Each structure stands twice: as C-alpha cells, then as structure tokens.
Image (cartoon, rainbow, N blue to C red; front, side, top):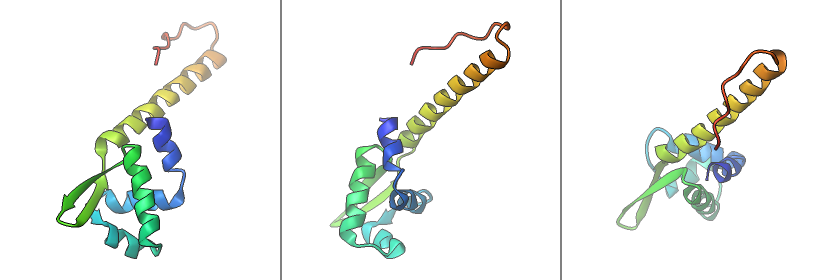
Length: 107
C-alpha cells in the first residue's frame, strides 16, 4: 500500500492535510477552515488518505476527528528506505565493480 500512499500524497492539498493532522487530531470543520476549500473536497481527500492508511478517524457523536496513522507512515518510510538502499547499492557497484557488495534482499 506504500505506493498508493505515495500517489495520495502527490496531491498538495492532501500533503497540507497530513501536516495539519500530524501533531493532533482535527475535525473536518477545522480542516475545512484551515484549507479554505469546501467540506466536500476535504472529505474526499480524507477518504483517499484513509484508504491508503495515512490517516485514522475517531468518531465522537456526529463529529469525526482525523489524525496521522503512524503505522501507515512507517510503511511508506520503509518503502522509501528500501528504495534508497537499492540505489546506494547500485551506486557502490557502479563505482567499485571489483569490490564485493552485500547481496540484495528480495522484497
């Protein structure tokens, strides 16, 4: 799901939402006011972010509060880190082809 999450954060509004919910949970109304976009648009962006595991929701009566899902972000970070490891290994093999390098782990 990390690739889908990266696609989701390709949208600048979704990145702003993630920044807003990174430190504490916020209601849809709070996000709408902070972003100066319609409630419908915010809800749609939140649906995408929830679907990719980047935010969680907590219901309190009729209100919904959103917060960053740390497990979802950890999955994205793991994917980026593994990609970076592959790039560094390829670079090391390119600049020092005669030096043995650790075998790549299958993903």
